[in-house]
Amino acid sequence: MEEKELQSLRRKAKKLKQQLERYDAFMEIFEYVRKNIFILNPIILDVETTGIRREDEILQLSIIDLGSNIVFDKYTKPKKVNEWDEAFKIHNISKEMVENKKNISYYKRDIEKILKKHKLIIGYEVNSDIAFLKRSGIELKSNIVLDIAYLFSLLFENENLIDRKIRPSLSEAAKYYNFDFNAHDALSDCIATLHCFKSILVEKREKLVFKYDNEAMKFLEQEEKIEEKEYKEDKLVKLAKKYIKIFESIGNKIVLDLETTGIRENDEIIQLSIIDSDGNNLLNEYFKPINVTEWEDAYKIHKISREMLYDKPSIEDFREEIQKILDMTDYMIGYGIDFDYKLLIRHGFNVEHIRKVDISDYFKYLYRKILNDPKLKRPKLIECSSYYGFKEDDFHNSLTDCYATLLSYKGIYKDMLEELSDVDEGKNN
Image (cartoon, rainbow, N blue to C red):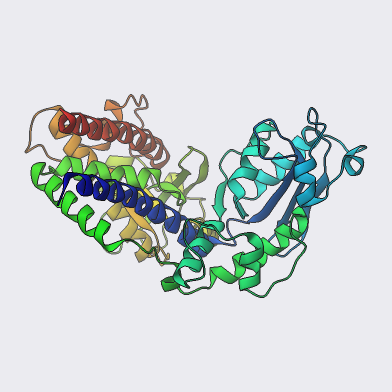
């Protein structure tokens, strides 16, 4: 193969790798949305503007919910832009139509309230709409954004309707699902987008696969094999990649810890604490055991006595509340979480859909490297959290352990990033 041809193939392989990474990331979000659609409480959003430049402004913002109910629909007057002849040819919003309207900034608080209530924003080419909102001073904090235009580019290519380089318009997407509408009115666009979203949501996965150039894929696989041969990853590097992927994933995460009457099959939960990944307290309760009456050995560890639990409710009184939290959870983070997970199952809770993340498995290898001791046993939570600066000393209280675990979880992430950064430097050198 000639050098020129080799370089061309290498560029194609590099581009393909980026496209595959984007596809995997997008489909992960799409599957998460499919699974949690009602929990995410989605809205469909669209804007019409004075143009596509950075200095252009919003003329109309429309938002509807999953039931087609109008959540927000306003025409707005721009502050600085006075002419939009080219944009007018598309959406027919004239200066006269917005002359007596308020600027989008007037609705800032109302819009932000809506965005806070609805975690998922769906749109068609919605990222440009989001950019306009942000430039208008509207804050979006933790919303998931799903641009279904990308899904239609995949669908149309798999159906041989269009080349991937040309992304189908909303009109073309709606026509595919036999939906007629008045294009380039923000509210009509929202309704059409909702129809397209609901339709593609139930589409077969094989219609949304990523088509790739076989020659470029073969070259990419060969390159990756060579790279893997040249640099054999050690255990810590593999764990770092896995940990970072989990940490940066969009799923709902909780940190959970519990205290029990012991470690036998018939022992019971007597304290359960759950916090979210921001440290917000979701649950912290003591429970009176139903069958176990003595726990002297466990008491020596957590100091939870029978007297402390005399007037406490049983775990059954909180079953519905606990299960509701677990139903919304994708990742359960803990230190030695296997024990907690199995005990929840023994108590009849449904946790099979939840992915366990035992941070002790990751910290063990970090600690071995830090102390230069490859045979070091798994450190305790107090050692791990102290290393990351946790100051409390009330360990074996499940709420304290949750906060210690959360701090460690975030600290390990930074160390894992550094670990991969060191590896990349080594490769470059």
